[in-house]
Length: 511
Image (cartoon, rainbow, N blue to C red):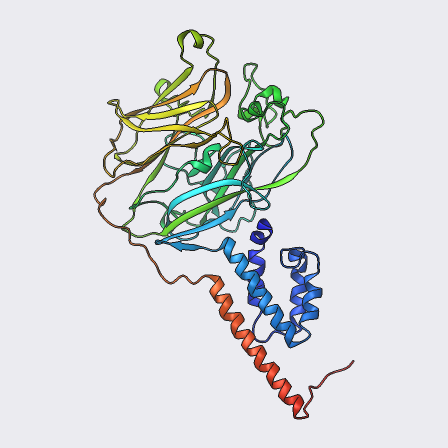
């Protein structure tokens, strides 16, 4: 029901525009054209909309019924997909395209031109979670959200379909990745993104700051700004080893080549090269292959851009960055954690990995958080003098319900320093440290760290001036239009009744 309502918002907006005070039987033709799209929806789940409307529109009472019913449908739709305004901040809930899965399956697809707020705005938060067709949160114990990332890109105007191919990346003139400000030479281009921790990791950007997007001056001439998703979800229902599936262990996927057909190295035992889109993790005998459709539900909060908002840059660091040894910020993204055979003796099952990075600007840190996989303990970012810039700890679930799944990281703690209290200077060498439990081995884990940095603190005391121009939800326009139409229909009905009483009859044409 939830998905059906959401997916047909545009259809019913068209439906509204088609209804006016001159509604007549001519509308039946229009409804026939859209019937194949909205048949079996929440309004009339088992009847043809054309048949119903064709019958109802035969008289004034039918017209009134259709208008009232349509108004109710719009009210229902607006409760799901409208832009809300609270304390000056706009918010809207969106859904990704459908993600179809069955036990053991892997979906790791790119979705282009996703729905996203338009205009020159400041993003205040970006949250997401996996839901089913009824809108219910899906447990990590059933579908593991390895990661989701939202990437901004510029597409040449007039290009209808994405030409992206995993082998080539975006090395084409029709597409330009508008990446974050991070230092990695490849990959990690996203503006937003998390994994299993997405439900309980705070993402809000504190006032007076904002992530600036939609600035027309930043868009190359002849291009337009768009957004894409990469969603990596692993269905672990009925899996022989659910945790092994989430760690992409190659033996569970029976994979010897990567998604491009290249043989895997003999020592590659687990990671992204083994759980690519379309692969299958081993499930128990007798498990039925029941398909289901899921969606990434994402909620964006934003304000209209103004000069009083302090822009922040997004930096993503990777503990596998090779810069310290190579002079190049080659971020390998994933790594393995070996089991500590001496842990019992030393009473220490902590595996620590570190990397260094030179920071490109001077600025104030306003937010920080880490991204880890199961087995992760926590991460910290240190300044050149050893001071703690931000420390982020893994939060593990303790039950079975969505958002509290035992054994899974369901959140990461975050840092919100007092404005101006945590500074980084240009070319300062930072140290990233990631800690994992080595009580057992882990494959394909990550150690990323996100921070938001404002380049200037000169306007920290400025208040955000929110542009609160009149925003009239479609709901109210629907009420006005239908109210007027109903009034007109009543007047017409009354006049016809008076005409009938006075001996006048409508002229009918027979063929």
